[in-house]
Image 1: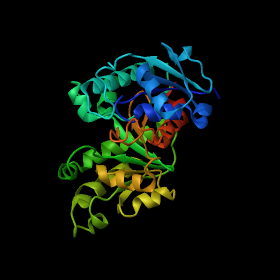
Image 2 (image 1 turned 90 degrees about the vertical axis):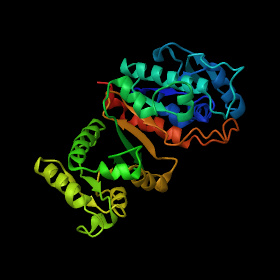
Image 3 (image 1 turned 180 degrees about the vertical axis):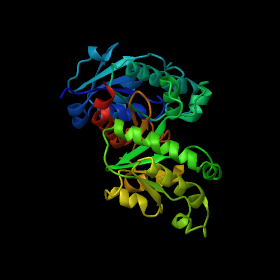
Length: 332
C-alpha cells in the first residue's frame, strides 16, 4: 500500500514542537509508514536539527507531491514567518503564536484539498495565540472554523481504548449542568458516526456515570436517573448499541479489556485521567466529525525544557502512526 502523506505543522516555535518533529521525522517506524510534510519555518527547523544533533537535510517544497521521501530528508513547506532577531526559545510570544496558527492553517488547506491524508499536530500555547491576536482558544476550535465544522468531537485513543468527551474546557460545575438527555443522545449519534468513519463498526459504546456508583439510584445524585439512563433507553430503542451508565471507576478498565469499543466520558478530567494514567505519552487525540483527519499529541509546549534536546518524541510518533492508520478512510 502506498504510504499516505501526513502534514505536520511545526507548533509553537518557542516550544518543544520543532524538536519532537525533527526527532520523529528521523524515526524509522515513521519513515516506513508515512510520507511526512512539515509546515513551518526553515530557520526554526535548522535550529532544532542543530541542538538535537539529528542528521537531517531540509528539502524545501511547495506541495507534498514535490517531496523527496528518503531517509535523512525532512520535506518542509517554509512559511518563513519567524524573525530570529526577536525570537526567544522557551518564552511566550505573540509572533510565535501567530506563526503556529499559520502552520496549522496551511496544513488544513492541504488536507481540505486532499493533498495530504491527515494532519498530525504539535503543541501550541494558548497565551501565545492570544498575544498574537489569534482568536481561537486551541486546535479544536481552529480546525472547526477552518473546516466548517460546528462542534468537532474529541476522542482519545490509547492501547486500543477509545474515549470521547461530552464536555471539554468548561468548569466542573458547568460540565454537570451540560449532562442532559438531549446532549448525550446527540453526542452518542455523532460519536458513532466518527467510529464508523474510522472503520469501527462493531461493539458497544459505554456511557460513564457522573456520580459515585452512577448515583446509586439517587442516593449520590440524580443526573443518571434523570438524564443518562433515559438517554440510553431511547438510544437503544432507536437501534444504537450503547450501554450505561457504567460506574466511572470501572468503565475504562472494561473498555481496555475489550467489553466496549468506546466510552463517552461526561467531563474533561474523567477521561483524561483514565487515559493518561494508563499511558501518558501514547494517549493520542483525534478530532472527529470533520471532513479531514486530525491526530495530535496531548501534551503542552513545555517551554521550560524547549531547546535542551531532552523532549520525548514518543507521543508525536504515535500521533503520526495513528494518522497513517486511519488516513485511508479520509481520502475518498
